[in-house]
Image (cartoon, rainbow, N blue to C red; front, top):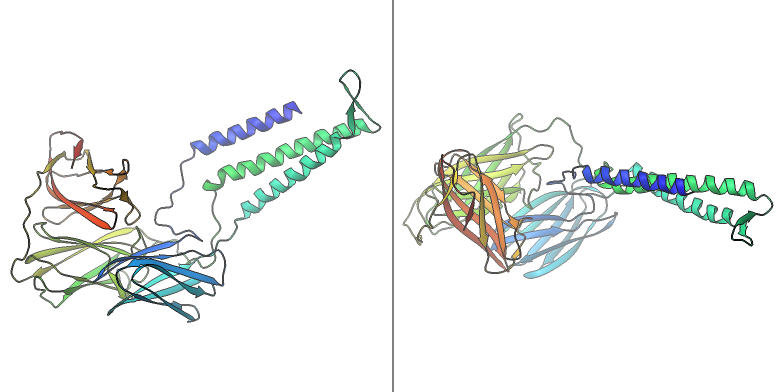
Length: 432
């Protein structure tokens, strides 16, 4: 029995070493079955993050919650059979229970005043993978064999002198006992191995998942426009992004929610004095809009980050012009940081209060080349409750405009600065 136990320990130790050495599975931008979905949208009155709770079975209530500065009307429609469920959210922090009757595609229509956005998503219901049944069965067999082993060993009892003498049939019982212990050890090794390897084993396709082609999707093509055609400083205007499939020309309506938004849109003035990071509303298939107001006339650049389902990320760009008087308040430009081309640069900053996640990360860093041809987006790493740092590499010498963003309390903080990239080596870490 000692040899069997020792063998079991060696097997489990080998499995443990194997699991530790395996890389963690990549699950970026993947909404797992039963998990909540967070979607951020920019309305004229402010930004709202809608939290759509996951479900473990259907039919079931579907909770939608948000913190909003104005009431929201919610209308949920099944894209399979057209069934609807409606509710509303009051201003402040609140939730509403809608209802889903099956897994699959739905559309959540959200109205805030005169603005409406439609959010397509899928209700995913978890399904057990075949290997989980093997694991559960192995645990069951282990338990039964352990009980059987205890009963079998009960056929032997100690006698004077501290030895164990089998009763009638004891030799056979002893053999059965060893067989039972060996089987229990083997089944326990299988069960524990599957338990430890669970994060690295394939999950079962959930009910309601979208079919995948396995061939990816073509790049999307974008067209930016404004209404009115020539915006004026100090007045609201609508910036519209129209997306079409690069192969078919049809509207692109398969955007994945990545970092809590289908589209991350960055609008900057050519000189970098005006910066907006917003998340447009989906008003029709392939059509996204956002209301803006800017204080400074001139040429503006728009960069949209998107990610299509079953495909990779893409950066789309456009431009427009604004006329009118200059109503901007000119702040003194911060002293530029210096960096070396092609070498990692770490930027460290501290906050006035505890930093909370925004768009799924502690912080975001937007970097744009002075000519507007290149834009990069990096994510921060927390360095304590009130500090974070960003690490990035700028490939070419030149002047770059940068904006670090993070959330603390109820405020979104944006800290602009510039980076002068040189050819010769400089310090790798810079405080901001």
